[in-house]
Amino acid sequence: MITLRLDSDLEREVSITARNLGVTKSDLIRKSILAYLESLESNTAWESGRELFGRYSSGLKNLSVDRKTILKEKIRAKRE
Image (cartoon, rainbow, N blue to C red; front, side, top):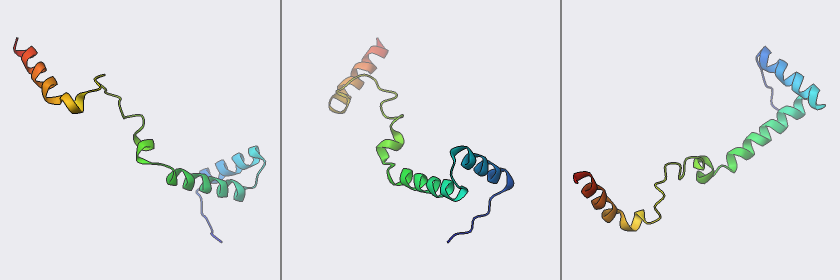
């Protein structure tokens, strides 16, 4: 058993939401905690950074293999 203290604004939000959903406040809080814990467990490194990976892509597929050649070409192009 856990006793939980909420500030008046949050308690009002919980009451209104529970009433609108037709559940008790305890059920709403229990389901909210479970959903939060599940989101913590399923959040892998890939999921955390998904929107950032490849965001600033150069469009080149060979960067890891040809990085030195590509860099030399860019330097030459700037000098010319």
